[in-house]
Length: 161
Image (cartoon, rainbow, N blue to C red; front, side, top):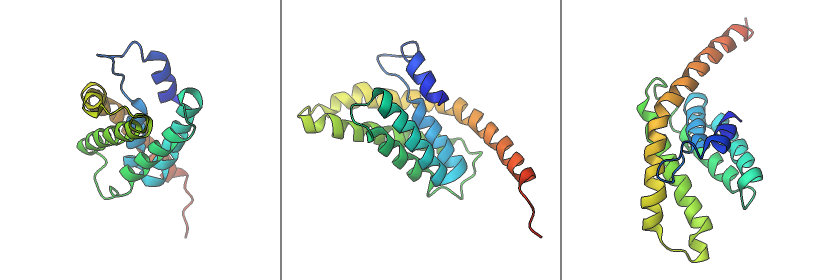
């Protein structure tokens, strides 16, 4: 919810060369890495649905794409160290490319607008770069909150004897 509010209210102030970072992908990937695929998919679905309801042309497109990103980023990385900041950076760049490429195919390509190289150069690559820069501090904050949450969950979880 915080990502949605920040992205929808401050986007004109944090725009660089016509590109706005996709904070939603950063948060989805962070949740997927820290809490695994089910929570990553759930966060992705609801974040995308919220965007679809307020800004989307088609309800469900963002929800589906973000859910896939959350699931794919959480599934194969159970055994990686969550303290490793390179994994989220790599996954955010891949997730950003996947989202923008899929969005291009579903919204522009089928309408006959076949200028992918221009879209890649003007939108996808700058957004990937922007997201990579913001991943480090955002993942750090989410990692800190997740560590505190896991400690709290351990203390409040009943012990089976």
